[in-house]
Image (cartoon, rainbow, N blue to C red; front, side, top):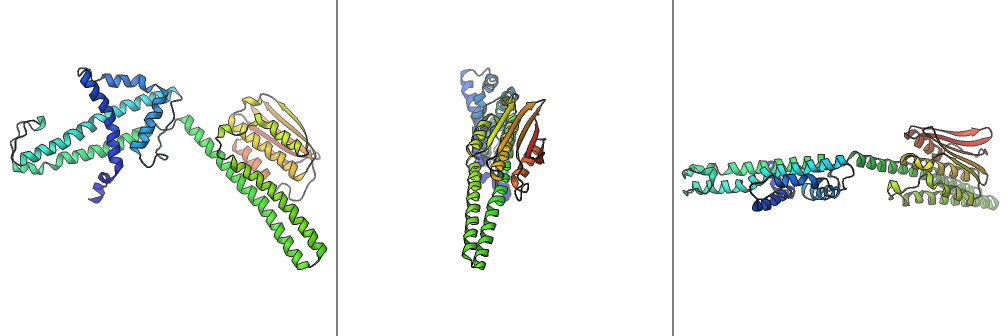
Length: 384
C-alpha cells in the first residue's frame, strides 16, 4: 500500500500535472474568443515549433517540471533547433503535449467533482448539476463509488506524467549531432586523462625514484665528493620533473575548454616557434589544405606533433629537426626527424605510446624509431 501511494508523496507528480495544464490554459483562453474552432491552437503550434528557440524553451520547461532535481541527467536537450529534423521533432512534441493535456485536464477537473457529487448522493442529496450522474437517485450505497473517480484520477495523473516524460526524452532529446559532439568531448577528456596519468607516472615517478636512490646511496657512502655528485643528479632530475609537471598542468588548465576551442594544426606555427625558442633548429614544411582537415583529426594531429617535438627537446636537446605536414589523397601525414642520439630508456615512455594510441584511435598508423641515422616519428591519419 505504501508503494502504491508513493507517487502521491513526490513533488514530480504534481509538477508534471502543471506541465500538462499549461497548453490547456492557452486552449481555454482561445475558447473564450471562439468556441466553434477549438482546433486553431493546435494549428498555430506548427509554425511555432519551427522557430529554433522554441525547442530550447520547451527543453527548459520539460527539465524543470518533468524531471525536477535531475535536470542534468534528464536526457532532454536545452539547445535551439539546429536542423529541420530538430524543428519537426519540436512540432511533434508540441502537438503530443497538447493531446496528452486533454485527458489530464478532464481527469483533474471532473475526477474530484465526481467524487464530491457521489459523496453528496450517499448523504441523501440530489446531483442534478453533474451530467455524468444525471438521473441518479441518492442512496447510501454510493459511498462505495466515491473512491473510483479518485483512483481513476490517480492512474491518469501518474500514467500521463510518465508518458509525457518519455515523449519529452524522445522528441526533445539530443540530436545525432549533439550526441556526436558530446561523445567527441568525452573522448577528448578520456584521452587527456590517460595521457596525464602516464606522464605523471613516467616523469614524476622516475624523478622521485632517482632522488630516493641517490639520497640513499649518498648517505650510505659517507663521501663528500659522491654526495655532491648525488645532489647534482637529484637537482637535475628534479628540474626536469618540474618542467614535465608544468607541461602536464598546462593540459589540465585547458581541460575545461570546449573541444572546438582547442588547438588544431592551424595553430602549429606556435609549436614550431616554441621549439625554436628552446634551441632546436626546426625546418618545417606544410603542404596541402591543412585548414580543411576535420576537427578531431586536426586536434589529434596537433597533439601528436606537440608530443614529437617535446620528445626531441627532452631527449636530443638543441638539434636540427625536420617537420613535414602533408594533406593529400584523403590522408594527413606527419613526420618529425632529428639526429638519433639513443639516450637510455628511449621508446619506453608514455609519449610514444600516446602517439601510437592516438593514431590507432582514428584508424591511422604510427611508426616511431631509428631510421637511416635519424630518430623518426611518422604518422598517417585518414581524413574520413
